[in-house]
Amino acid sequence: MNIALNLVAVRTIIHKEMSRVLRIWIQTIVPPAITMTLYFIIFGNLIGRRIGSMGGFDYMQYIAPGLIMMSVITNSYGNVVSSFFGAKFSRHIEEMLVSPMSNATIIIGHVAGGVLRGMLVGALVTIIALFFTRLEVAHPFIMVSVVLLSSIVFSLAGFINAVFAKKFDDISIVPTFVLTPLTYLGGVFYSISMLPEFWQNVSKANPILYMVNAFRYGILGTSDISIAHAYTILLGFVVLLFSASFYLMKKGVGIRE
Amino acid sequence: MNALTIKNLRKTYDNGNQALKGINLNVAAGDFYALLGPNGAGKTTAIGIVSSLVNKTSGEVEIFGHSIDTDFEAAKSCLGLVPQEINLNLWDTVGNIVKNQAGYYGIGGKVARERVEKYLRALRLWDRRDDIARSLSGGMKRRLMIARALVHEPRLLILDEPTAGVDIEIRRSMWEYLREINAAGTTIILTTHYLEEAESLCRHIGIIDGGRIIEDAKMSTVLRKLQREVLILSLAGDITEAPKLEGFKTQLRDDCELEVEKGPDRDINDLFEQLNKHGIRVVSMRNKANRLEELFMRLVDSKQAPEVAA
Image (cartoon, rainbow over all chains, first blue to last red; front, side, top):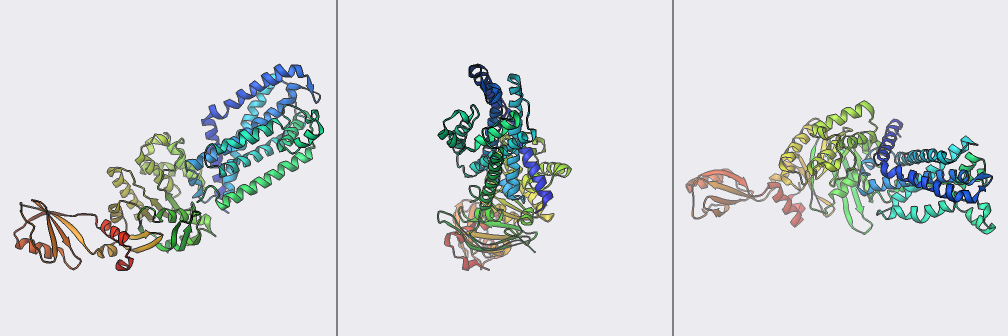
């Protein structure tokens, strides 16, 4: 493999993706900022005052890491699925397919675009959160690594969704019917210790629970689950989803006739 | 050396449609090659496989000796593609589209910027470099696709109906540019429905029909095989009846235009000698239909490839 060629190519895809995010900032940056501001006002400020504390922290502080993670996950996923499917739909994906860059480069470039948008929005939501509450980072390495790995996982998931999607409806089904429920049930707004044991065990089947809790541990130092389990799950998903993406690209599923 | 070598290439789609039934094709380096065929003949499928947009069922493809299976990076680096359908990111700017394509081929920085300017100027799009592609006319979009395909300076350029829907002035300027880059050493394969275009530009011709190559020869050789030619003669004076000429079929189109059908065994000198004897003066002469078009229609209609095969 020509490494220099692929490095320029991956940089080009990342630059193209970021240009797109910034060009349509009204669709990409503003909505999550408004949504998260409303979450902080309604759930954190108004309802949170009545709830009091959770896990030893005031409710606003407790939900802030989950809301940041929620915005990272949805934006990473949304960026890759919409950009890659858009390229498929208007056929300018052919620009990449005819070029000598490797399939891995195409995947890495798009995933990096998703991660950068996730981080950009995550940083913005963090700044908004600081207007409402105080956040001190307990474990910086865990915070950064967990948010990066989570963003990679959902960027890869968005890529696979885009590969299979045939129409625009297909790229909204997973976020609406899978991602949103799993995120809401992933311990963003509550500690699973509040649930009956049966539902605690059911919740542990939800991978987003591990991401939210590991990220919360990175910031607040408290978690409902083992951090080692969270890393195992995150790394496992990265390997699994990257392998699946690579296989799909190699076979040309959904992109080559 | 061959720019393109295709050996026993087959493609069967999932719906059972056998688009290519084992085609073999060799295009020499430096050639200007016309690949013709009716709609659905398999041209775009063949081009799709060569450019990695379509998975082949079996067979081998080499671009300048590099296999698209085992040496795909080198093979793809040699190839530029202008597809039949507009496949631009319509929301991106003209300059970005060409610059990004350079990046996909590993060309960045100053070299990429210079190439973008060079090819956008050559295709007369430099003034529109900051406009989004959506705002371009159909002809401009086609020229943009050519600039995009050239930015990595490929040794083999494949153009799949590049002048479809383009007005005659732009079409002719595109022809001129294609001649220039071919003269500079780029091998060109062209598919087109404008047979005048193929006849004017190309030195070799391949005709594909029903997933098979039914003709593959020099343009001049193919045209010589034309069995019948119909000429329209504009006459200096009016005549009331078509003259009877030995070895030619004649028909009066109107008072001053005569249609003459000429067989392969007759020459034009003979025709004019006979017309002189009848006292008929000819002002000008043209073919009723493009010569290649006549041959193409005959080949495709009858599918009697052996009749004209080399």
